[in-house]
Amino acid sequence: MRLTMLGVGSSAGTPVIGCQCATCMSDNPKNKRSRCSSLITLSHGQNILIDTGPDIRLQALREGISHVDAVLYTHTHADHLHGIDDLRAFCQKQRQQIPLYGKPDAMEHIVNKFGYAIREAGDYWDLPILSVNPVEQMFELFGTQIVPVPILHGRLEMYGYRIGKLAYLTDASAIPETSLELLHDLDVLLLDCLRYTPHYTHFSLEQSLEQAAIIGAKQTYLIHMTHEMEYEAVSKMLPSSVQVGYDGLKLEIADF
Image 1 (tube, rainbow, N blue to C red):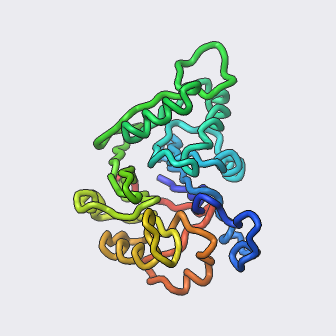
Image 2: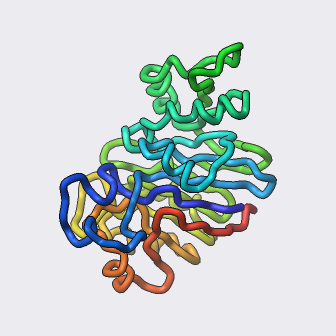
């Protein structure tokens, strides 16, 4: 399967509005970060989105995404959810309902906030046509096992996901021991890394490197970064098994 990093930025994105720091003013395209989301393309061609942030429309246009077959939600903060209405373009094109998957409380939140989009297909396609599917354990999607990985985002319990040899852990401040047991034998890990200094709801760079060493994936990519994290500067600080993610990066990964 293939993973495309649609966005690796934090909630403000980079450049930050009104900021003139070195990262925001950089002409290095790897310092241009849209809000955090990724796309999994399975070996048979199905596209699974991870989150629908507010930049999803531009990300889809940039990457030429022609269809979306399902969405995995990590949690329902605005920078991971509020592009949900842009799924209507895919519903219109595909003429089919798109299923959403996530924690039961996340699915309930989506129903309460975006209830107009949770409906069955009919004669009109001017709105998203979505279904909610609460999950609490491993499930199968298009013949592929999806493993929810509970993690902590401050006091909020949310999901990361493991798919084959890939794990995606955004917005993490702690990984319970029971979840670490789900992360053995990874080829690729995408891991939250907000900034240099500690934050109560996210890993700092030092904490991300500690977690990467514990998990031991063959390669770890840092995601969900603020404008403090200048690409070249951070890259020079990392061991060979860790890299800085960037918008548009594509990885081929074993799906079993």
